[in-house]
Image: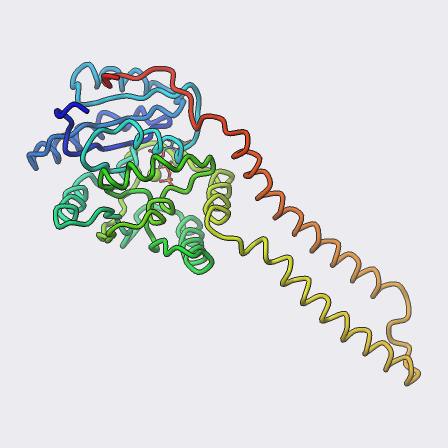
Length: 314
Ligand code: UDP
Ligand code: MG
């Protein structure tokens, strides 16, 4: 290892952010130079189709502290930050969204806690600006759900915006699972962890790169990565259905003996068959979600393919 590595690596995943990159670089440089830190900015181009790659190239030419990992295609946000952590050389690594929703100034608060001896310092969203009520509501509900059903305590209202000590990053590098929920993994490793509150800003420019479909997949990755509860749901539902049917049998016998005409006809049969059929299909689907993920792990393909890198001397 060369010993001219920087104190801080800032990792930003980039997917079609041409309108933001120059401002991201400007804000980060202002904050980090102002604090007298040595730093590098690791930009991951996650298969952008706009001018982002050219702008990254220009930034690197202007300031060699800006380094670039260029993916061969879009591999997704979580994989992009994984690559960033793989390539980063700093004593601490900060993961930040490229869209400036995570204010660069907050990095100084993260670093201050790191200097106190904490090895993971995550940023907690005290407030979110400029999000739709739908995103805000679903995010809140999701963080509360995952907090309750998983064995690890993923802190509420945190994203991937966090600082990780070199030791933590090296531990993360050993975990090569494909469906990655980084904010969970960085808790799973342990170490001394703490949070710092911040106000999540509005997107500086452009649109969110997380449409509903990606959000649902991301939520499922988070849940399946850390919980078996959905798989156990089938068993619980089975016990409930079996218990109810015993009551139903007893009720049917009593009614029949007392000469009642309830339960005659096909409607009740049809309803219960359809209901149970639906429940069974849902349970199969849940198993499918896990099975597909197991298949992806077994294939063991690389997490990402890199076209080229700029600024890394290896
Ligand atoms: N991003 C990425 N690959 C993707 C989608 C998003 O690298 O497939 C990046 C994006 O450029 C941004 C960060 O991930 O830097 C967070 O995305 P975004 O701001 O769109 O998500 P939101 O804040 O709306 O949840
Ligand atoms: Mg954003």
